[in-house]
Image 1 (cartoon, rainbow, N blue to C red):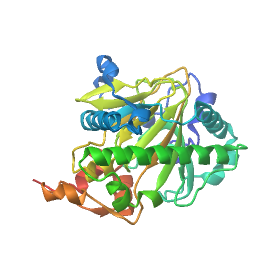
Image 2 (spheres, helix red, strand yellow):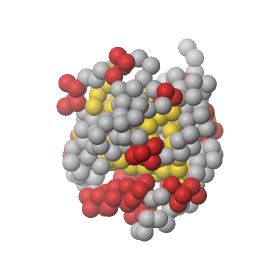
Image 3 (cartoon, rainbow, N blue to C red):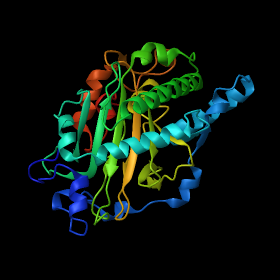
Length: 350
């Protein structure tokens, strides 16, 4: 939750009661106003991957889709996924239920209050930057660890069932994508799945709410960061705010209708021995509309050691040390939202 210095336990509640008031100074998270500039000309170049082609039984169609997936992972670390098979009606219902959760009275959400333990089954709170500068971010969140045991709030009514169904379908999509990525690296299709323990791996389900901010030029919803795990899947309520860093520039992401935004996570960069980079991204704000995003992160089993795929090391030196996913998760939590990336701490020097 927010620190006592900010005296804000809910960004949503604060925003609704202080619509035109200046935001507290400890929410001023743009240190360099020039960093706001974006390269809109690159938005049209964001890769689009057709999931139905990747899963085609036609070997030529499949091979072409694997090649396109490899290019997207190598050049952007990021793509929009279409024809993914997740019903649009399910995504709409999930978004509706996620908004309803954030609309619950603050008192009802307090039972999920963030206790600082990254492995708590359910956490709810606001965004806070731990270092001495005590910077906060303009976001309320609900974060759920959905595996190996599924955990989900029962309120609002039906949320648990909708969340479970969506998580299950995303897990199946993630598995197929990882098989395609494995093939693109010259590995057997199940190579990454098997040695990472993916089928019993950790899945993180997060719902982010970004209310209108009176001074969006001063604050961020989330600062520049990369994600843990293999793949992150994002849908949103039609309100923009996601930016991805490409070739040193920020690019606004405007998803295709009914697509799912996918980005490479830290563990996939390690497994690919640096061939596919975990992409930096952030959430910016606006002063008119509430943005809601639902994010699902799929990763390996917590107790499995993850590093470069062994077969890749037959012809190249390792760029990263192997480390248990649980331990890396803690490293990332300690260094998150700060300069540099957690991956740098397991990268071999030289």
